Amino acid sequence: MFVKYLAIAATVAVLLTACGNNGGTGSSASTSHMDAPDKTGAVYKANCVSCHGSDLQGRMGSQTNLQKVGARMTEPAIAEQIKKGGSSMPPFEERLTDEQIAGLAAWLAGKK
Image 1 (tube, helix red, strand yellow):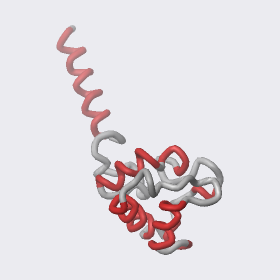
Image 2 (cartoon, one colour):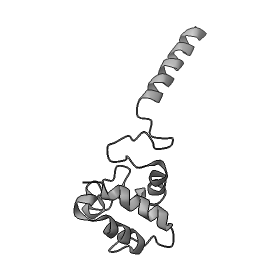
Image 3 (cartoon, helix red, strand yellow):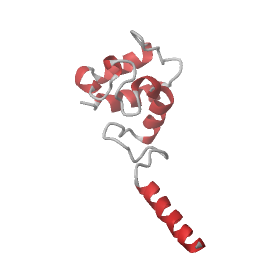
Image 4 (cartoon, one colour):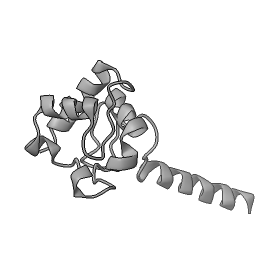
C-alpha cells in the first residue's frame, strides 16, 4: 500500500513540476509577455506587478496595460515615465537605480 502512495506522490510531483512553474528565477516565462531577463524580471515583480499585473495586463485600468507599450512609447519615454511617474503612477527615480530603469525601459520598449 505504501508503494502505491509513493508512486502517486511521485507522479503528482512530476506533473506539478512540468506544468506552469511560475516560481524560480523567471527565466521560464509563463506567458509570452513575461519574457524579461532575470534581473529585470525581478525588478518588475518587486516594484511594478501590483499595478501592472503579472502578465503586463494592467490592474488599474487600460492605461496600466503594458502588453504593447513599446508600440505607443519610445524607450526614452518609458524610462522617463518610470523615473518621474505621471498621472496615477508614482516616480521611481529614488527607488530604482539608473541601470534598473534602463533595463525595464529596454524590455518594455520591445513590447509591440
